[in-house]
Image (cartoon, rainbow, N blue to C red; front, side, top):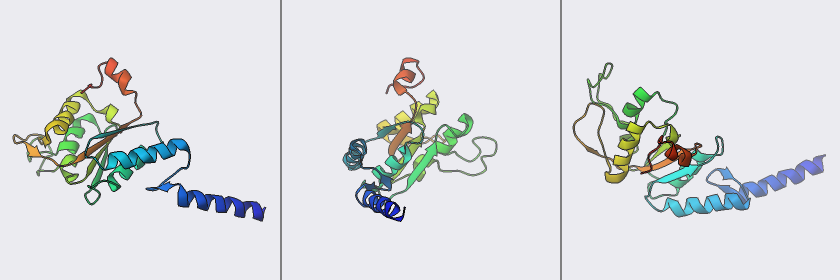
Length: 180
């Protein structure tokens, strides 16, 4: 039994040394493809969409892209679009001005501003309501946001990485997700 355990331990050490990529383990051809794709997209500033089943490591992939990007010294800010009630999500993403709604006693930055110089990870983007899809699109197109209750455009500087386990093509066909 000891010899078997030692063999397994040595094999695991080999995998950890040679199959470790930004905290993700894997030596299969499919994982090598994922690691290669991360290396390629990390150098760009383009938005990235990570697709995969729940529990497959989409956030780990997003973090690997961030760590290998020119923005690695900036913040990595994550928000789960499906875990925050719709009426609070806009304020969480874009911030709000003092007095814009009951309980808004101070001006507050949103996650887009917090991610300035770094990366904003929008987990479960498929859960994003249509009205907020438009606001994210505006940010992707011209880099500006408006806080809830605000009137001035604020220039943002965050790279967007989004992830979902939903079938976006099906959602497009159903009119639940914007094509643009």
